[in-house]
Length: 71
Image (cartoon, rainbow, N blue to C red; front, side):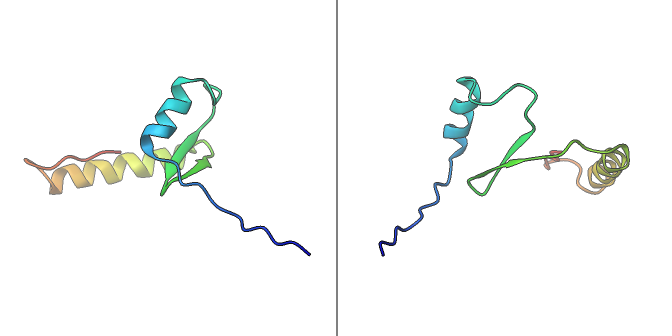
């Protein structure tokens, strides 16, 4: 019996961006690159979007000048 090793390729941000520009993914695809892996994401629910917005507001009040808050 022959065994073959599986090798997982970790994508770089540059490789992912080039695939997007080349049209590898459909425009409506909801994808995220996390630790070199491409994950399909489900759309945010209204409750999730509200929680994210409220967390952003709280962080902006705490971390003011000199900090960058990205959502």
